[in-house]
Length: 380
Image (cartoon, rainbow, N blue to C red; front, side, top):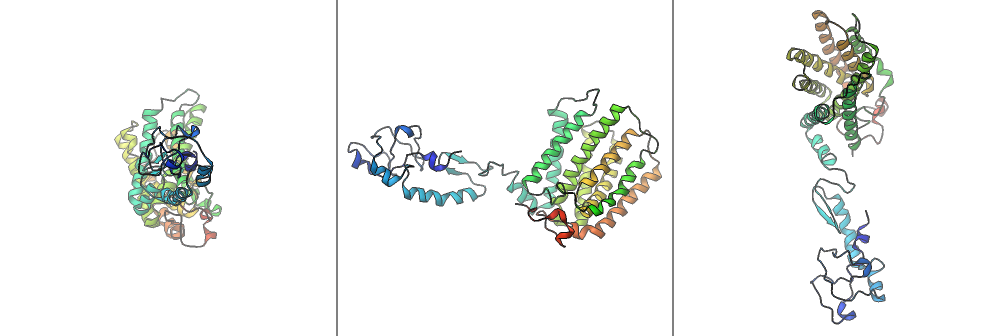
């Protein structure tokens, strides 16, 4: 985009045109405009008045001395420089810059304000409401891509190609929001976290593998396709739930944020019954398991400081439950649910205080204890 000075061209001379062309007439109370052949297409003055076609078009030495090479008087150029910062930093108003009108929802860099500072400010002021809106937006995009936008993708060599593409697209959207809000590192999505605490995810991984005690059904292509697609499901879910949503809920405190993450994770799984053909009984049991699972994973994210060690947990948990025939005994499922609650509470009490961060990535404690919150990882 050309600068406002270049857009104005030579329109806006300050010389009295009666001195140069006695027969020329003034067309408006504003300072008269000098039109040259090079600027005949730019008929608007900096004040928005339209010039006529009368008057001589010579660009004399007197014009050059008073207007400079840009053709804009020095006083007008100074006034433009004084207005420009205010126009660039004025939030939520449409302002006019020469020939370009900046709309309400677009910043001077072209980013949509509703995805940028406006929505982020809303989430900062209302963490719980903002987390609900983020969760709803993520599920709307997921359903739209899965049921409306993308055609059925299930080739014989990769039966779960459609699910893989949908989850990859949704993960890219979450990444873009985190990048725009400067939350990539603070949310644990762009950092390995505390490597010495990765072992805390082993109990959850062992529980996930316990569902495959019987065996795993399916041919090689089916198993590979299912494993790859569910790995993308894990990446997508952890980035949006334990990354974006949990970061938005940070001001509530670790315990309340983890509970809210679990509740929102529960409500999100009702889409399996509404849109993806799951039975109501299976969906209700899945929602109970997902809520407790989301709670304990929120505690792990606070303890480790990264979502990446958690990606394998939901991926293997879903894979072994889907590909393993039959179902686990009721007593084992009840034991797993109790373990989820106890382990999640222990993690939050042990690590939640130092790991809970606000929406700007601020947390109490030493920076050495939080490598994912290095300088520059805060928000805009």
